[in-house]
Image (tube, rainbow, N blue to C red):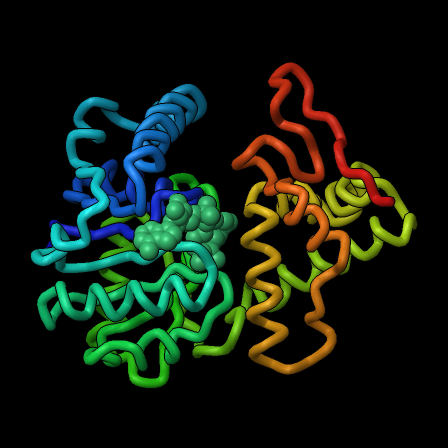
Length: 294
Ligand code: NAD
């Protein structure tokens, strides 16, 4: 049975992509964030995303019809009929914990909660609800509308029915999925976050420049993007928060965040989403290396 009504929480990089993808596949979406300004920007980003997708793939669909399926709001109460909720808020435990308390109170008991987190334990989210069997990890890749695979995470209490429903939901979104067990960072980000963090240490130590590091990964391994370009795409703040989650979860020094990463986040260099990270995206004509190591 098709899931019709979906709540999407967080209208940042990931929430925008999830809402757009869902609307493109015919779902009714309520997209929630904390301010009207963020939601207005989300609408602009979705228009832009659809235009780009139409330009490159000619399969995005009609922009007006797609946007009409998304209700942009700051009111959590609108989730009282949602069949499925995908949570994509900032990768901070305190923020997400409050959200799970809130939606557990508002949504019907049968509603499934999917956490789109980079590293936080799904079992921990589930423990903050009265429906731990209906909480699952749904780790989407960025940009969501064009990435075909999703990492699905089985929390300690996640039921087989929830997993089957989540797989069916992803099929409706045009996605394939692989189910893994719950562990901080799951499979993809346990490896990816360490790779990115190590690449930043290499930059900090002066072993190679930003573009040399990225070009080595592309030329030697055939990767489409190098680790520093990938970091800019994900968001340097999200990378830092995710590595901090891994460090706290495993109590293992190998996950210590690189000081240069911390400095860049403190300096407001968050990557593509605000125009500057390891590269400068504000001059559309040419993307330039931006980072100062010292
Ligand atoms: P982001 O910083 O771009 O967006 C986060 C959004 O959450 C912001 O718009 C913020 O205003 C909103 N938010 C904060 N508190 C909220 C609240 N109480 N209610 C509703 N919205 C709230 O971050 P992002 O990159 O979109 O990441 C979102 C989640 O997805 C994180 O958990 C992240 O780890 C995960 N993730 C990110 C990527 C990626 O490539 N960026 C990939 C997979 C998963």
